[in-house]
Image (cartoon, rainbow, N blue to C red; front, side):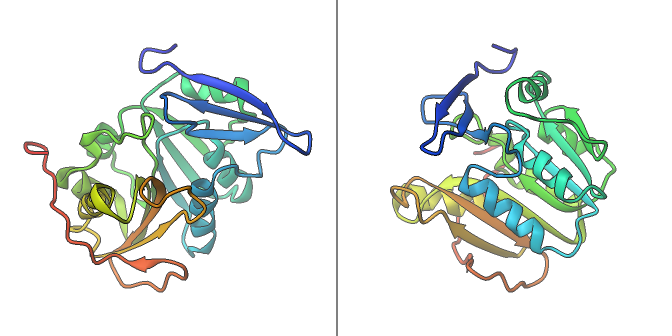
Length: 240
């Protein structure tokens, strides 16, 4: 228990004898995890896809990650790109210690841990980033303060003109889940007119899957991604 959440940490034996440790804060499953002793092997599809896109981007000297999780992605990027500066904004000041104790997280000089609400950090920082990664969840819910037009404007303010925003979204391709995807994408449309999506096809159903949004200010060629043409309503701070 921490002031912001109740975490459940589980350890499971895999078929090859390795141990998979995961962390969750709700009934819908685990949000992050690591194979013990192998921090370079990202467990979940969405973290692997986020890392793959970072690998492909030419500029990554400054990276912002909103949402710490078990710090598996910051660890991976810091180990692979030691010259990059990685700021991790996590609202729970105790989560980094939990990651150190249970998830093989070893802080690197290139990682700056910032214990602050993501929305407040975006409104106050003077830093500008090549890459912004958004992975803020409580169970499968995104705080509404990170789904509005005003929030999207702040993300644009901290992203360099040639920068890229990558967001992990739980949504789908039909019904209300597609509406949620459209709303999530529309959050950024004022600042990033070019938006592309990729759905985790290995999920049991596309109505409840991880979706990666890649967003930029100029057109991109993103293999495996679909250009987002959905026109969803834009939520606002005073009406969401």
